Amino acid sequence: MELKVVNIKGEDTGRVVSLSDAVFGIEPNDHAIYLDVKQYLANQRQGTHSSKGRSQMSGSTRKLGRQKGGGGARPGDIKSGVRVGGGRMFGPTPRDYSFKLNKKVKQLARKSALSYKAANNLITVVENLQFETPKTKEMLSIAKNLQVVDKKPLIVLANANKNVYLSARNLTRVNVVTASELNTYTVLNAQSLVLTEDSVSAIEQIFNA
Image: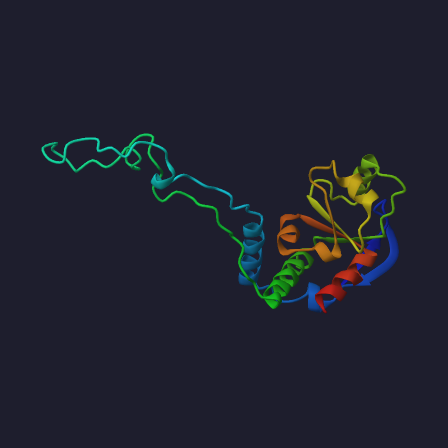
C-alpha cells in the first residue's frame, strides 16, 4: 500500500511511502485486539479499593438480645454486616488486575489495529515535524492543514521530541507518541493516524522484529 507524503501545509510533496503489508495489511484478528485492550485497561487500574469487614470494625462484642423468645434469629454482635454501622459483607479488597498476555498475541493485536486504520484510509503521512520552540498555535495550524483537527489525531514520531509533545499537550483531541509507545488501545482510540516519514520505517522495524 502506497501513501502520498504531504508537508505541514497539507500540500503534496510528490513523494510516496510504501506501507508494509506485514504490518498494515494483515487480516485483523478481533479477539487478539479484545485481549490486548482488556490487558491495557486492566493495567491502568490501581486496585487500591478497600472496605472494612466485621473483623476490622471497632465495637462491643456484647450480646444484643436474649437467646430465646425474641421471635427471630439469634442476634450477633453490633459489628455484623446486617446491622447499620456494621462491617461490609463481601466488600472490595485490594487486588492486582494485571494478567499475562503472550507477546505474539500483543503483536498481532497491534498489527490488526494498524491494518484497520489503513483499510479505512485513516492514515496520513507527513514530513518530519520540527519545532524550534513549543508552539501550540503552530501545532493547531498543522492539524487544520492536514484536515485532522476534528478527527482526534494520534501523531506518531520516530523518536521523542519534547517540543512537538509540548506543542500538542494543550490540544485536548491531539495525542503524540513515539513508534515504540504504540499500543492497540491508543491506535483504536484515535480517529486518524498521522505518521511522520521516519516513524513509518520505525514502526515496521519494531513490528517485524
